Amino acid sequence: MSRIRAVFHDPDGSRYGIPTYWWHGAPAGYATRRQLRAAGLRPAGQPVAAQILWRGVGGIRAAYLYRVDLARPKRTATPAQLRAVRAALTARKTCPTCRTVQPYCIPRSLGECVDCAPGGPR
Figure 1 (tube, rainbow, N blue to C red):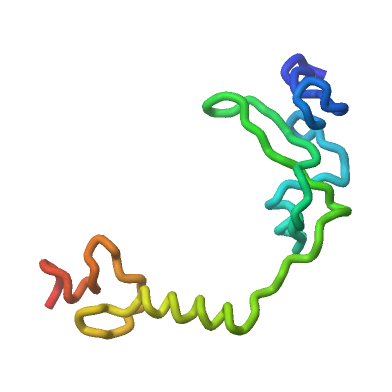
Figure 2: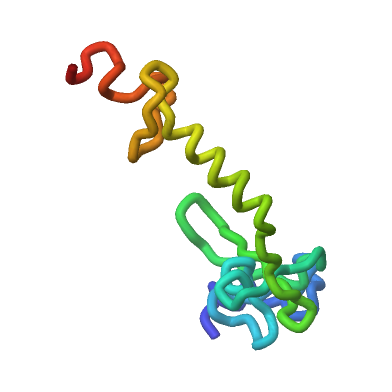
């Protein structure tokens, strides 16, 4: 084991407070939030079970790990939530000046569609 890896090897948590492993050194049964999401799971309110530390750009980086056996399936959006998201996206695409629904989100810097904005094509 290299010295860099040995610095971050603390499986009992005596040095860092929680079990700590090096990059690609965590045992099976732990996953990050992204790994859980890719598997269709969520942490479900469980505390951080372990961490991975490595040297990266800007210093020491950390990734928190959760136990896979305590994770629960992701919740699906209700039809009302999906309607609300659809309505919000439609509002972002509707020009307040000409009231047309554009195929893109209206830039907040302009406040209106590119056709209605000053200096736009007319």
